Length: 321
Picture 1: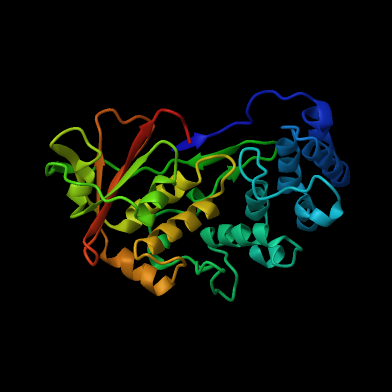
Picture 2: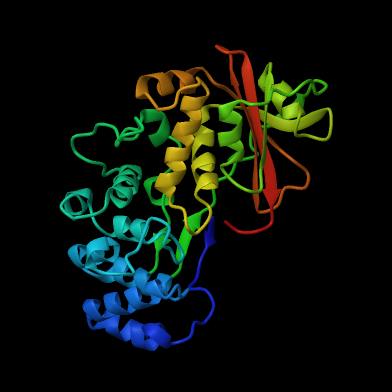
């Protein structure tokens, strides 16, 4: 299902948006568009994002990289500049890593761009990990749960994007009645709980000492739910999507947030691929549905039998991602 679609509302023509900006893009007047972007960006005008999108999408890679060049004067784009999505993600979807690797990109842009290419099956050829320990190649459990063309927004030439909706549970098939215990005490102060809660602003997260059903009982209204056990790989796409749903966040940032969460489940500050693989391999995962679920919903519990801890995350909202 595609939920992000379209170019948004009509925009004023100043700084070249609208027919003028589209015409400059069609004519390859990238220097002019770059100049207009930097003026708008330096003035704090919201039209900088649409102009940057045109350049990041259509300009040659070396030219588009100048959007992020702080040495070229005021108005350089940062990791947070966006239109339908981050400008660095637009750029990263348009060129293979062999091209992006040769660009003079600031480290704050290069890192998510490399992870974007990893999500698309085109990470750095040497592999390796970034400074937080997250590998530049997807692990098998990351790669198995979703198709390549649903992982990152599909950007449109003139603005806007399309994105597949990832849910947890991803389907209602195979679900059954799951009896829940009476809610017990919640654990507070766990780093992983804060990271889980921080993935979005429309879900709630809790931690308990117990099983997945004990955690789920904290966030449900009744003594039973319609749910089922699923491998973490089946839920992983929904977590990445959740953490990157805002237009100023990219899928790579969602992936990095989930890796940070998995590392924190063992109280680690940085990720170690082997240890994260071990965590993923032993997690017992429960996903369920709620009667009031709307377009976007996510209900899951993650139980780590090695530590005796379990976390639950739950929420629903009618707003499209």
